[in-house]
Image 1: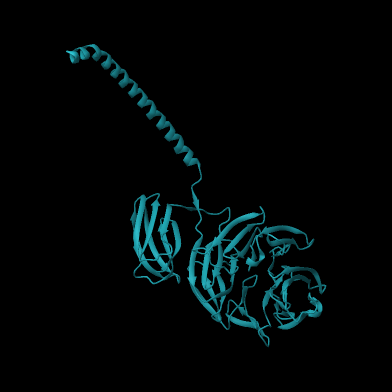
Image 2 (image 1 turned 60 degrees about the vertical axis):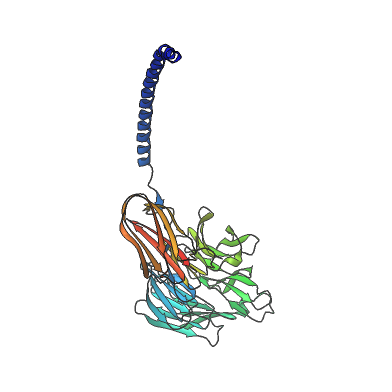
Length: 456
């Protein structure tokens, strides 16, 4: 009875409420759908108006060679020279990462190209050879009597003069006539302290106009103090002198208006000085003992220098750090660096490992990224497996390969058309020996590379 009365009394109200709720739900649902449609259209057009994502891949390739002592890009930016302890200079092709030819002779601690790229200069502590880079013939060479004859080398931008710094002197030759033009010795340099037994001229750099020669020297006293000297070759006198402590590195800018050198002031790594006024234009924070090489970019907008385990890029226009390059995995000391003339590439080394990076400026041609969330782990791999995961933004023909440190293909993981979405791989490493490798993914026009180590 109770159940029947309840049904007859409240059923019309319940049904009416249900009808109102149903009508309200349909209306509300239509409003939601309309809102989502309008919102989606707005997002679509906003996304079209936004720039496409830009990704610049740093590491181009890594190669194993002899312990590297110096390096220099050719002005064409197509290849660079690498001096090493293997008693030759290797010429490396930038695009392929292969060593295309060798200049034999001796362990090469000073290697660089002349301004036009016509000459390749190879030197060590005893002397130097100037090679004609087109004909691969030696046009001029000089060697002293001991291992203190030639610590440093520099060629004038007009390719007429070459200077070498040794123990207690600097010698300057005319390249065409092969005649010694000038010797700058301790009677002119007047080392500090004056009772020092000898001085070693460790670095040399001609100003672009050839009128000045800048160099630091190290004394034989207990502290091995170093002075930076700017010597006027026309007036035959010292134009500027400053104590650098124990860390002497120096470099003229390409336009000759500035000079960069390691600082002795607390908290400073490098000072930038106006060559004419001798006023300090800028200081770069850090510590000078980590700086082993200083290079200006071809347009003088960036200062590139090694700093312990990194290569730092300092924006001279904005006065701030632009970028940092490290080894993979990070933590290994970097001794040398150079930047290509077209500013597309940066080269460096850690011991016998030669590394080429993309040097990307703030403007350039971007690479459209079709991958995201790419990870390889564990790194180092201490067992026989390596995990790879990434998200493919759009379906593309994709290859996944592993190369050894010599650039040789050692394993192909995949070569197929992959659909958009997440992809995961467990890579078997049992057939690979311990060492450094590089995993490369090519998807459409986009490339990704990352180095990893097997250390079982």
